[in-house]
Length: 427
Image (cartoon, rainbow, N blue to C red; front, side, top):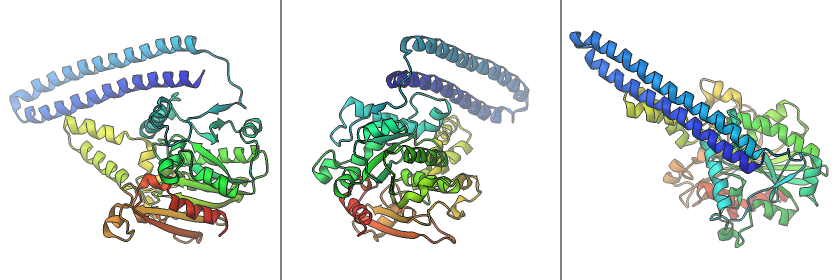
């Protein structure tokens, strides 16, 4: 089945899932309204028993109607699935094939291909865990991008995409709700060339081969980290020449995913972890993000108020993806979200032999300004971006602060690149 066919089928499946969710929310609203009415009638003795009987009849009929809607919805889904299978059936593609990707140019934002790709990134952030669990065709999965192609982690595919591979590789991981395209954000404004990004600059200046990750940001960070650890080993094994050093660069959630991958890779004794020389985290919420914390509180408060409007809204907010929930505390390993108080767990996600660089930003030109300290780059506060709290371990760590820089600008800002270049050049 082609990628386009998978997306259409995934979109159709998502619509059917949305019908089920909406039906359940209607049921929640009905029950909340009924409880409010019963709270009144139960206090009036002559009405208490008749009202209870009427409510039982209402509940039975409502549940029957809503259940019928869900059954019909799933029958329609099965019938249309059969039709789509017949219409889109195609032979399996070669595992070594390289697949074209949306061009990494900052002037592509008005094209249909870019809008479609960006929309899928946002959708995965919102309900990516659901898409993954349902094996939905809109799931971004996890793909490695070299130049303008996604490659399967097989030697023929990587060799075809990299005619002149370097033994030095820089690996880039994007943040929540985006795709790998985000690394070329504002390229023309910052560098005078819409195709310029950290990867192309490192390749030009230091001969480093850039590789970009594409992944479903709605899944749990530990799940993505565990999978990335395995995929990185496959990549290293399939690379055309022996890799001498790996530089890992993650923006926002991407930094957490990289820390998670380092943990699971090191824990399982994967050889690729020994190749890592440096890790850069750009605006990563190591101690959590304010909006994620606010979403948790608002969802709990609304669900605690027994009114149709608050119950439905609270359920919707609480239904946010697992990836977004992980940003509440900056969870990177399973133990983080299993602990009663994840803020106090000891960090085990940094590699002792590698250097670590944590970049924070503030909207104020002075990073020390009280406003900048309070709101950070509007998405992550400065203390959170400056690295995980270490209890006993000691690592090679440096922190950098950038004033007058917003969260998304860290991905392609010239000042950030200059630090990355100097570090990678050994200056």
